[in-house]
Image 1 (cartoon, rainbow, N blue to C red):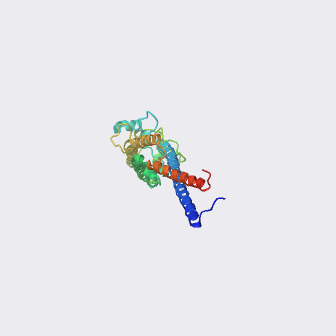
Image 2: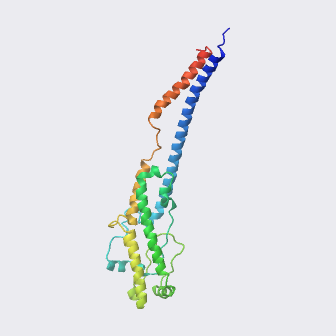
Image 3: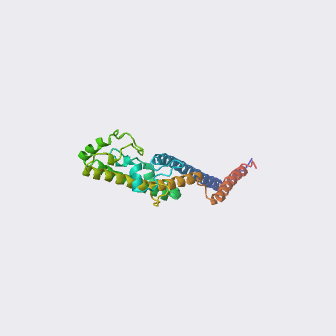
Length: 268
């Protein structure tokens, strides 16, 4: 009959087994939590990218985002007055849009992981804000004098603005102001509307030959390219290399505990 060890020996043995297995289990539990955390971050970044891509599609309507579209190329005012008679028209309504994901990118819990695209998207957000601030001033001027607006609009003989639209307006067929019987005050009014539209389209939105890298046309393309490159290179953050060493240590502790247990019961 096997002689049982004394209580102190038994207690010491089982305490050592429990310690080794607890240490091993704690390590692998920590590793599982680290893997889950990295997967959660990876999934969160993917969701954020999906939101940014959706908003870039919306911005694309304004920034001439189609492939091969050169945007609003630089032209003389004389050329613009002939090509864009709609820019004189007070019914040319310009609407804003919302980009909450883009605007709050730097406040995202994943901002630290988005370093390569933060600057391009901050610049894009700035470009959008410049456009929107100009639109606010434009609308304040156009609708600020209700009597003038009501007097001028019928002379353009066009359909009213589509107030349900939320995209960049396309050209409205409008007669040239020189063909209308406008008073001096009305001429000043429509000329100012034209110059505000000129600033909006030529400077703030811009085109391929724009000298301003912060115009919407160029800022949009810079941000879109940065996002595409970031998405292509995106991978789940790997565990540190030194984790491998601790994997071995934890595995050895579990094995030694199991081996000692087998010896205790004289199975090995």
